[in-house]
Amino acid sequence: MHDNDNNWIERFKSAKTVSPDQKVIIPGEPELDRKVKGFPLVDAVVVDLNELAAKLGVEGLIGF
Image (cartoon, rainbow, N blue to C red):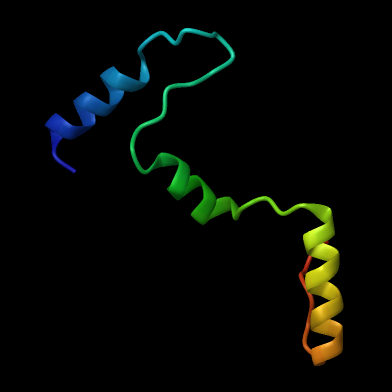
């Protein structure tokens, strides 16, 4: 990234939010966060996917 971009990001991220319990996010940040952490699944979906994996004889979701 260019220094100008980094300055813009730092300035934008340091802005005050309407609600103190929220944070300022920049475009692409939620997608990057999901790429790193994965995305949340509802418990019922995890159960269904693991049942399907068992029927197909493949490994289910790890860590659930």
